[in-house]
Length: 530
Image (cartoon, rainbow, N blue to C red):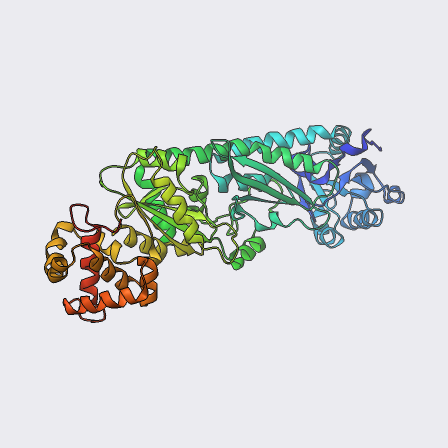
């Protein structure tokens, strides 16, 4: 009996036949996921019938051909010589299990079926003639398993592995991090099937990509893999929506997640972890669902971060904002940041709000913090901001684990910054330090320290000169900033010394500097640099 399909581009694959085909209680010895299509069925009741086999044939043994272990072994050898797809025998015929080792060595699958071998032949022939029925069964099984997995990425990817033989699957963040599945899915070898399916976030933007790499090269398998991956898109989007809703309802969720990411890991798995996962993640026996292994049990914190749309690959620049009134912010800040903020998520953190943005590739001469500071200053003066804020920028942080020290620097800087201004954490100066101290506390000591100067300084030029000389390194630089001749600066410094305000006296330098800043920047009265 020989039965062939009419459409050469719609052949049933051996993997489909075994896993989702018509064979009841099938046990497979040898390579069950062999990348070969089944084009015909041949019933053989004696060994001579195997001398003229056609390639890609499923050989069904009956009668004398299935009567003993040696006849089954001979049939396997004949099948190997003629590139047959597989050999099929009924359970209990000729001690078929004893031929398992030979099937493995030859690479010819031996299928042991329950019931009659002739009944199996009819079922295989029907499936070969209508291969779409096998694919439909595969899709139905995939839909059931994905539904049972629920909105959980690891379980969804595990379900995909269970229904896609010879295929590696991974859920990949936009930054390229594998957050669930096998890293091998990203590196399809030459000639293998590679499939990518976009997973949108709840707002329609990019959330992740489902990537698959299959060793099967049979016609039509790529479209089958794509259809199966497509079944997982909606549950994954639902997972992200659920995570975001949880974050919105529970304000501490995002803050707690950030603390865990920063202080208890959150970096991507190491190459050693990925290699171990690939070794232990070999394809399971047909019909058995694979439990998530090390390569699929990626960092759950990282998965939550991706679900929330957080950037997970550095380098990062960090933004920190601090409301003038600690009991204000929340929804107002989130709304403002989403419309006009520089970028990245805005999360409550240690009394402030922090954000981190993946640093773009910049020319070596361009300072990334200078650009970040410009972006944050523009946001702080935007009309949509209804809460006075102080801001700071810091960085870069190489990865999530490196955000902790950078956050600490930025939070420290913003804590001594006046509302409406932005500072760099690496350049915090006396102006920022003074912002942490009430001006009415410092004004009295400042006026006392500079009493002789203030009495003699009728136009404020001496106070401004003292402040600039303390700011810069040389008289020439001070003259350039003040817009006067260098000799004028020298003369004024001599007069300052005569008034007891020597800018080169180390015991007075810091006190003089702070006093100048208090009086020059005090809006309540006192000289102004403007």
